[in-house]
Image (cartoon, rainbow over the protein chains, first blue to last red):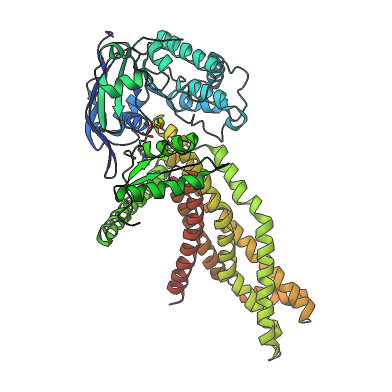
Length: 258
Length: 331
Ligand SMILES: Nc1ncnc2c1ncn2[C@@H]1O[C@H](COP(=O)(O)OP(=O)(O)OP(=O)(O)O)[C@@H](O)[C@H]1O
Ligand SMILES: [Mg+2]
């Protein structure tokens, strides 16, 4: 595993719902071990981009490569092999509401491994304690607060010790302290799992604090405006829309992290 | 306005209070003034109103969603046709997925959870009993009333037992239990799956490699296919009992006489016909409910539509398939 090997490459991707084109001509590379941030205004297609990368929606045109493999050309079992290495934290949490937290986290383990129940039970409570929810095994998602649900679904996302972790707005709806703790947790997960992280977020503080690479999507021009380390972009990017976003509309190019 | 007006100004010293209606009036005035190229001076307006007016003009055009409000008729027809085609494709895919999931279940490669299955068996079966009892008894009572009025004229009240028995076993038992289950269970399936669609729970299943059809749809459908024929038999019996109550209390028949007459009338093949129907209904209701749930869009509104559409589709399918089966068997 060399650090800069391209892990995911997006080539000439066009995203569309029917005849309504969201984004065209997206080209960027995510390296192994990156913390890659997808930025852009509401409705520019960030969640949709994740859906393309996760095999939930075939692209209108273009391709997505995991290493040397073109994801959408692979047979079903090839796609499943790649998805086995991913974990996803959905924008809405997406815990299975008819199951307890323990069952939620155990399901991927049961599906992909032959571990005995006792070990699975231990793994589940370990993952729950990682996100600060020890003792909540028998709770149903409806019995948790929004922030706790986010953390629980993070525990589910890391159930299989994935190589690729996708986050759709992980800190939306969290209080500032919890958001900060989540950032730290994400960083620690990367250290300990060696995972590549792909994060959709609007939190500038987290972007500067953790991102190593990024892409900026724009709804008006329907394409990406920039890609690179956000701190570098903040210093060097000349595109007015990107600068406006990165400086929260102030034009002040100083990095401010909390 | 006549052409000599060149300048438009406002004064508001006398104005004590204002609300959005003032702004709307002002905007209309300003828009028409602009069209007539009249010079506008807003300085006399209350400062708050001035700010709000400029804000309302600063709203950028929506660029992300380009839905045109008015289309030509031909465009609309074309779009409807394309949507219809996509729907048919979706339905075919769903059917294929169900068959595939069923095959996977048979060869033991399905994520099927027995616990879910028994949960739905209970929801469809045991929990439907009270309402099915009520409706079936009442339908038996109604049938025997309708028959009694006619048959009494010929002194042939005993044939009420034939009418009720045949009516329940051939038709009403299957139909009534089908309609009740469509309302209770078909709707619930669509709502559950639709909500899971909204919450991205179905996506979450797909991305961990579990087929939502095998995991969610199959236990639901199998439970329904198993329980509906049983409910149908139960409804038949309750209907006959309901009919017998009228027979005994109003037609001076003894209970033994009534039941004996029913037994003589009914053949096993007739019960089979009712069972065949309810088995078909079970498949159709489960199919319609799950299909609508899985097709559901990503909003609360869409869940409501999916539920309604599941019930309507089920009932239409029930009645249509009922008449087709009856026609085939009797011709
Ligand atoms: N199922 C769908 N059918 C049609 N259009 C859709 C559908 N889902 C999303 N869209 C449209 O696609 C656009 C992008 O949606 P998406 O969810 O990817 O945005 P996003 O960048 O994640 O926004 P946010 O920051 O608000 O989460 C939106 O304008 C939305 O209207
Ligand atoms: Mg989104």
